[in-house]
Each structure stands twice: as C-alpha cells, then as structure tokens.
Figure 1 (tube, rainbow, N blue to C red):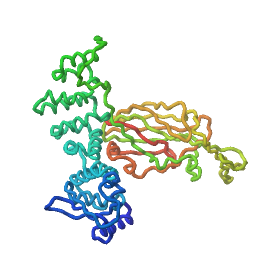
Figure 2: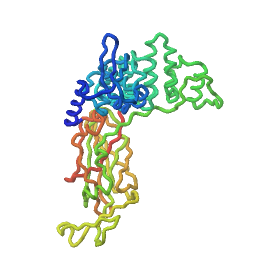
Figure 3: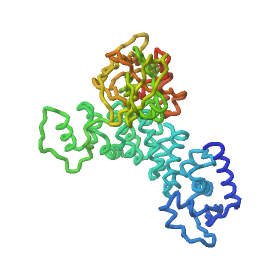
Figure 4: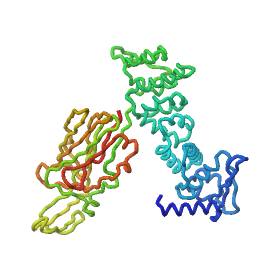
Length: 476
C-alpha cells in the first residue's frame, strides 16, 4: 500500500475504533471473562463475505444491532473487521505464525476468500518452514488457506520435509494429504515408500499404518526389485497381483483385486517445475504497441546473446523460451496510410532518398525459417561440457518459442547459453527493445531465485534487447 493510501487507511481505522464514524452493528467478541466490543458496518462485512454475513445481518437500517461471537479472539476479529472496512487491506501487522493461523481460520469460517489468499501469502513468505510445516498442517487440516500453503511448501521441499525429524510427529491424516500431490521434488517413488515405512515403525501398529498409506503410494511405479521393501505388509493376493504386473514373464489376463489398497497410477510423480523469469509479462507488448512506442532494435549483422547461471543447488534445466523476430520491414515505398500500414520518413543520414514502411500484420503470426544457432556449456570442476542446441525449423514472428533441453548442473557449477541471431538472407532483423529487470526477485518467487547464486545476461553488442524470456528447470 502506498504512503498516501496507508495514511488514509490509518485515519479511517482510528475513526472507526474511536466512534467518529457511524456504525450499525457491534460484535461482543471473546469469552465471558474477556469480552470486547468491535464496532462495524454491515455493508462492508457483506461486501467481503456476502454468503456468511448476509444470512446473519439484517438489511434494514435502524438501531445498532448486537451480536455475540465466542469462538474467536477479539484481536483476530478486529483484523477481520479491519480487512472489511479498509477494502481488503490490513494496516495492523500480522506479526506471528499463531496470529496468521487464527486469521486464516477466521477467513475460512466467514468465507472471506480475499483474506484467505492474503493469509496464504503471509504463510508462504514469512512463517512456514521445513521445521514447522508438519505441525502446522497437522493442526489445520480443515483450513483451506493453511493446507494449500503447507502443501505448496511440501511439494517444493518434499525431500527435506520427509527427512526432517518433525515428520515422525505429523498426524497420519497430514501425511495422507501430502501423498495426494502429483508433483513433488523427490528422486523417485521409492523415496516416499521408505519414508512411510520409517514413519510406520514409530507407531504402535506398523502394518496397519503402512497399509493406510498404500492407496496413495504409487507402488506400480516401482521396480520389481523394490517390492521387497514392503512385501511383508501385503496379502498374498496383493503380492500375486504386483508380481503379475511387474514381471513380464508372468501373464494373468483376468487377475483383479476385490478390495485392493494398491494405487492404480503406474507412473512416477513429476518434479515440481520452476520457471526463472528474465523478462516480465508486463514488458511483452503486442506488435502495434511496439510500433507506437518505437520499441524495436534493428539488427544488420550477426549478434550473440548469452546468459550465465551459477547453480546454488543441483538442478536439471528442461528448456528455455526465446523471443522471435518482429514482423517489420524496410521498403522503397511511397504510399498512403491504410489500416494495415504505417508510413514514416527518416532523415537522409539514416536512409538516403528512402522511406520506411512499417507493416503490421493483423491476421495472426507468420512462420519463418529458423535464424538461431546456439550451444550451452556446463563447467564442472575445471571441465567444460559443450552441447549444441536444437532449435525448431520454423519460428513464429512477433511471438516466442520454447526450446527443449536436458542439462544437469551440479551444485556450485556454471551453465552458459549462447544464441546467435542472423538472417540467412542478410536482411535486417527487428527485435524487441526490452529493459532487463534490475532485480529479478521482484518478478520471481523466492524459492526460484534461491536456486542460483549468480545470474548474468549480456550481448556482444550495446543494444537494449534480450531474446531470453524464461528458463525452465527442476531441482534434482
């Protein structure tokens, strides 16, 4: 919130608390020993939560109505009222995990979706960690904002979370919820199976606990040799079923399980993909805006773009996105303005006795033959591994293209991408004029930026352009 808006919000909040602004309802909040009055406006409450408050607050205007709320602390309900009165903003700081969890629970009960979203962001940015996520999830299984934030962290930090000592203190329901995730950063499904076996051994009934997790463990994705890790917990029918599916020498065409605990999903969970954004979406203008603001660079010779990344963690780069050339042409043409043409003159110092015709195609993107060449290198302990980049044969003008890769970069090592841009027919190429972000942390999530200790973008010529848009990768 800007400084001016913050000042106005603080004044309004103080006026409400001090009674300077007229209110039409009072909530008596807290238990009998600690009841506090919270003044509020019914209209504001109905705006943020029409479903909950509309049923409980009358719509007629008259004497101030009183309501009792015993299942919420005064401090928490004051934040709810503040959020409603300040149009979805909070001036009062939510300064602890406990307060944030209570506020998330209140937002869930009162069906205030925007407040739930704000609580989720606070949890993800400030309060949740590998050390406390299992405890938070276990105690808040029914609070949507809290569970979604916990599962997001568990998805990104799955390996660390199942290895942390607090994993053994988690409720079984929390682990079951965790196992419903389709994406998480683990090496393989066997890693989850071993974690669940480890957890089951800490309980009073090891077999029953592990079998409770089995419907959500993807046992069919395991190798045949991995089944020995948990075969003692299966029935003979289940053993036969798994053996028939995993051993190509066995054939049981009609084999079925009557009451199976075995998950039928036969493939591994995918790692949680991350995207390092280099050019924010706000700067990717359409072709008409580019023309109007003259936001293009003219390239008449070979130009090379490079990006260097130093990995803070072991990663696998899956690919990157490049911005294609613009559909702008230079011609000897003297004509009239049309809906599809823009005609401008330039000085003789730029083009002798000529003019520039800027043609902006309205009907979709046009394809052109690939004009990119490139390679990437990975530097590991003094050794350099170099690979050529395979670009699509056709690219789309005014658009962008995704380039698939499979490059492993160990922790602390460097990877560099080099892309050459040159028109094979020696025609000028027009590229977007793009400002590089001063601080990539402003357009990327914190856990994405934290995967790199250094990010360097450059070209071999002094131009305000960049063709790299995003880098796609996963942690390994």
